[in-house]
Length: 361
Image 1 (cartoon, rainbow, N blue to C red):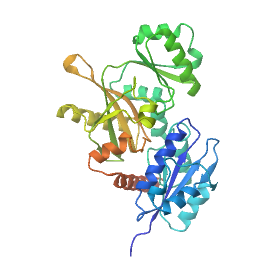
Image 2: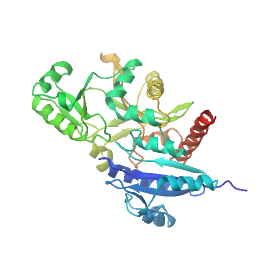
Image 3: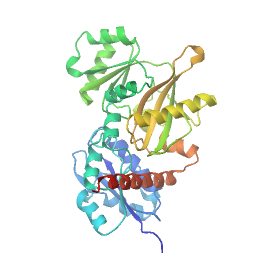
Image 4: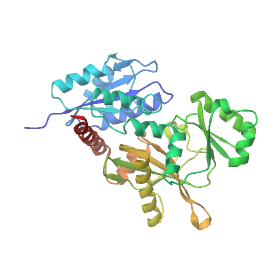
């Protein structure tokens, strides 16, 4: 007798500025999920926060993955998560939620908290890991506590920004700086600056996305990314290198133009590759990640006076588009897209069972 199919609820869209990226990511996850193992149910969250069952996508999927549009639409009939999950649990139907919500109100622990309350297995990091990694300031503070090297940086609240702030930051961190909203991803709201006037404008822009801002020194180094997978035991992919065509690895490079070069595996000495794989594990554990994350590093060559490996950030819900690094890194490491989804679902079920045993008194 064959095992029952798992009801895989794929949540996409959301209220953050990364809504569109999520809709593209979800399309490709739906196409790659094994229909022999899963009853896939796409659920969209509109920009206004309404939950809908993506009926068109479900119908299109029945005709084959090629019928799906380039990006899923957050339109359809009303959907309520808790009754849907309870229906599966009462009916002994295996159910797993796969949240593909990038940015605030999806990747920051809020959705994960809801899924914990729903008592349902879900893919990816838990509440604490999601919140820590989403907030770049707290992530950097935590990494520093664990002795993980990083670029020089400063975090500040928008109420601290004055006319003198750009000059003070340049004096502290150098002329070339990167300015980022503390709680945002996909390079949204990120600026590269080389003058005080540019920096003032960048601080204003970042402040439109979040009231906390991170300013980092410019790094003249290579951009290396790794994919991490696991709960208690971790697997790390081969390293990959980003070769941006923009001034930096921008939103357009990541999702629209697709012109950034990706070198997988990155051309690194064996000892340097092994070192950064261990650093990816250390960072993953330090920030309380589970399930999956993409670990981003800079590499300054020590042979020319560089500092070696510098952690940039961890991304707990990385992109899954055709040009995204996370699935590409695993493919280069011997795990194809469909098998990657299977592993993520297995890890979600394992963690849920382990945690539930610790709370059943």
